[in-house]
Image (cartoon, rainbow, N blue to C red; front, side, top):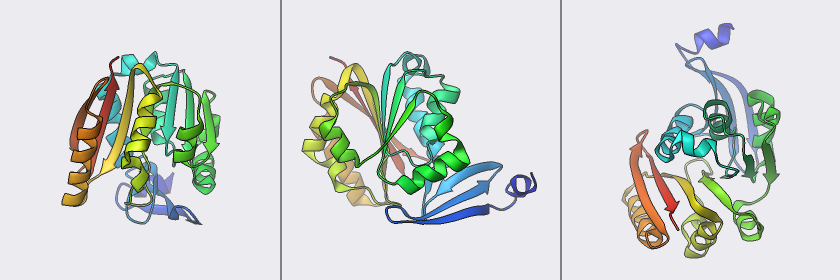
Length: 221
């Protein structure tokens, strides 16, 4: 494909869509790969896929391969789901929660998200879903952004406590955050301090792809 080859020289946008939730969405060929971007940041594939892959690798691919219940909060184009199914070969049940139906439509059209047999997509607000779900999970991936902004509820004690209660023993939360200034760094310090107590152990992977910091929470009891 000519556009794919040319994308090694310059990114080539092939689709642009306005979304009431995500505002501006773009599907682009970049370095021979289709990526999904918002106005100011990568939403799926590209650098975001590399960021979350590092977190999954820290947990251990062999460990994840045996997991039965995985929850993804913030699906976008589904790059972390593709890493789980295509690379890690996770065959457990994957539930993806995404508030924006328009981004899921793009994920289905350009990234074949609807072709993954062990994936269920739920169009819902992540806060509401976490509040209502009766299920426990081996792995919870939190990757929620509106462009470069992160909703405040992600860092509130109530949400943190509820999220931790959804983990099975020996389960993990992989939380992708963005640090753009000293306030963001202080916010992550506070989050770490509040969560780092029994039965949880917190590890931070700083400055992944420049502005991302991964927070990995392990429920060891």
